[in-house]
Structures are given as C-alpha cells and as structure tokens.
Length: 199
Image (cartoon, rainbow, N blue to C red; front, side, top):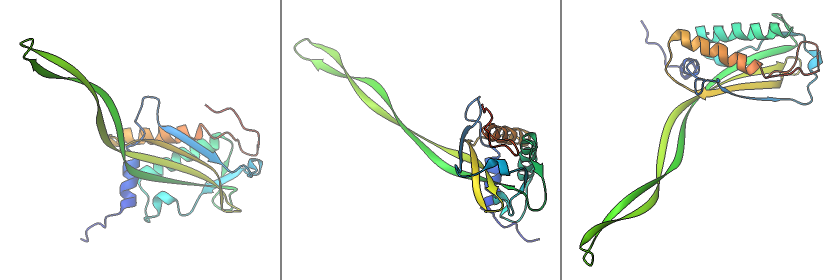
C-alpha cells in the first residue's frame, strides 16, 4: 500500500476545525464588502468550484459540515440553492498561522547592601520590565460570496481564534459557531438591497 502523501491543506482543514475558542463569547469576526455590488440582484446561490478548502482534490467531514452550515444560513436568508448558473457562489477557506505575543510586565526587586557606618544590611528597591513571550496557533475561517456573473467577490467574512485541542464532536460544534458568527454579520436577504440589523 502506498504511503499517504502529506498534504498541508488537509492538515490546515483539521487545524481550523480546532479553532475559535479564545474566549467564551466566540471568535473575532471581521467582514468587508464591495460597495458597488447590487445585492438586490442575488436570489440564488451555489458553491464555488473548486472550493478553496478542497483544492487538494478531496473533501473532509469538516468541509462537509461547513457546507451544511452555509446551506442553512443562506436558506434562512431566502436564497435558493441551484446547481447551475447561481447568482452568488459561496467559497470558504481555512488558514493556520503561528503567532507570537510579546508584552512587558513591571516588576520590583531588591538589592541588599551592607552599611559599615550603620553596621547593618539595608534593602534598595529597583524596578524593571520583565518581557513575556507567548507562542500560539491562530486559525482563520473565511467565507466569500462571489458574484457568479462577474466572478467578483462582493462580501467576505472571517472568524478568527486560537487553535486548541478539541474532541471531534467539539470541533464540529466550533465550526457551527464560527459559520453562525460570520453570517450573523451578513446584512442582506435574497432580492433585497436594504440591510437588516446584525448582532
């Protein structure tokens, strides 16, 4: 049997599945959009081909879960899924990076001196900054909405958090939370250009 070829993209998918547990309130979410896009034109959607997370040539249970979550979020906003010629195409990607935090903590210490005049030891305080370095892994899960006719991205959302060890069931729950957090910031419904309130 041939040994399995190491594929960084597959590892990245699994690592991103561990992410987004930095705080109790969930991941940090950032969004951006094309101000020239007419969102009232979009009523149908499909998945971009190939999906960036599956460029290695195969899917995983993580990418399948993301697809299910995306389908739920898009349908909740009135978009209809179609296999061919959709108005919008949804693409998603996971990226893992090593990060370093560096900060200073003020400290106080004492040096002791002997006074021959007083025939005793006395303490002299001094202050200094203690530099702390912490390395960690950060994962980013990005969802892009692409105008299919122009092949142009019109909206993007990213959930960012630290990668931590989780069980497979916990990883899937974190993926669900990440996709929900991203789409909570998407302000449009199908066929409408009027933004709705977001969290």
